[in-house]
Length: 447
Image 1 (tube, rainbow, N blue to C red):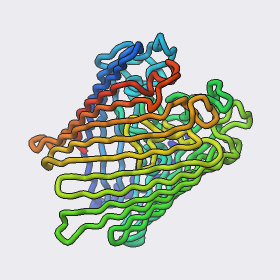
Image 2: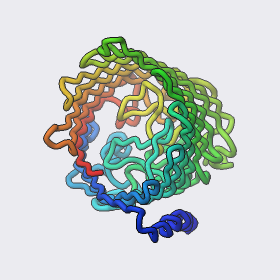
Image 3: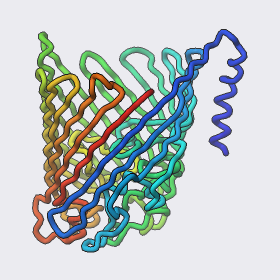
């Protein structure tokens, strides 16, 4: 009710302006249709799974008096065809990790569901932008992670101030999340653990799901741009859980012929626990308040004619686990490769190579190769998800037809293998390594 009252307060000025005849109201429809085929196959005894899902978002966006904007959209989901993805694998005793993410984690097995995903009002001038309601967000550690049928969204407020072309100051206050793979906005504490909670520090299953106490998430960010340089500084605060400081620098240098573009980047981060870590009981808490973690990541590469090549390196360390809820988005470091995350570890060493080829304006062909060295799977305090060190290969193709610019297609094939599979149990292999994962995605947008 409080949130609805805030919306009404923001709408009142908008309604009063509607009495002025010279103010123009412009309303346009928005449509986003996405169909997603996903399959996961194993060479071993584990069960293979597949799913074909589809979602349709229909809404409106409008502009009033040049400065006021509003947006609303409802999205429906459907399981068109799938294997028994909600059934536990009989060998490992674990649940499917990938295909179930297309549908509703909160009500497993539901074939049809929907949600009011967007409902917001914003006001914009040349320097200011203010918004309140249900909307998107894309920051280092809170972002859409749009790898399923719909992205993760936030409910709350945002503000940005752009005094000139070089500087931008931004802030977000979040009181609920619509986590991808769910059908309703959840309070901050309830949103943590939907995707699986891993192990506690003592090796037993984590018990923070449903027991995490946090009232809000706030993000403050400063961006600076000049002569090919881009610097971003941010702090992500999860009340009663953690504080994450993040710095990222990117530099692009183009030669005089504009055929060669050098790409450089560096990241540094520090995270520490705050408050009660989500719960005063150590057995029920999400993060140890005494945790202090650091991270460093760098990348370098070039783009020449129709090719782009980038290599990256990440190193993390400190005391305790670097934690960022998987429900809130993907990892920020340069070595992130789609379909796997590297949070939940006390230490990480990763190196990756990205190659992209653009045969024409409509096609992109790419490949990812990554090696990720993690703490021993037996060390629960340092390795939350019992994930072994692994090698990952992604191969993908993206296509946007010239005749149908509102459509695009994406094929992604991923393979992960343990760097040392000796002695791994079934639970340390299923969902994690020794698999071939395939995605085929089609999008249609009017917005």
